[in-house]
Length: 148
Image (cartoon, rainbow, N blue to C red; front, side, top):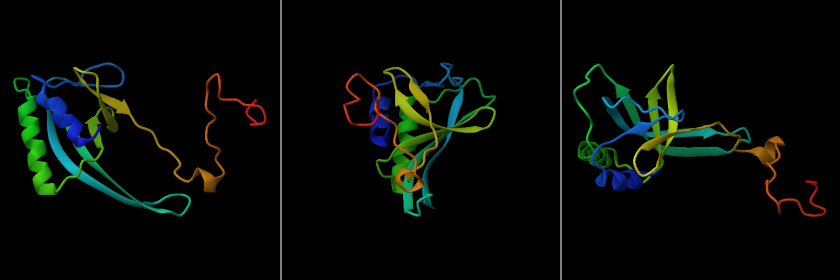
């Protein structure tokens, strides 16, 4: 999900809920303690220089059980962050503390924001000799393609 999408969803909600990949909800007394811009400059295993920029939301649950973050409040935090940090309409990653700090993608099911699992990947499969996965499906294997 990109920043403009979460803003659109927040405008139509009366409360905010984040759901973990296992189906459990983040406790409703969570806070968004950070909205930030993370820039990562790196070289992949194929020697290609890359730059990645994402927007980070950090969720934190306190012992403050009486307060709830309302959609309009989070919109205000996002809008201030856009101005001060010069945020682009980039992908959002969410940090949330479980056994350790986890990084999640973000989706939306019409009611809840979904924390989605992320994974590592080789960005230079062609240079590392890692074959791309074959398409699975009824028409994926054609004569002479080598997949049968």
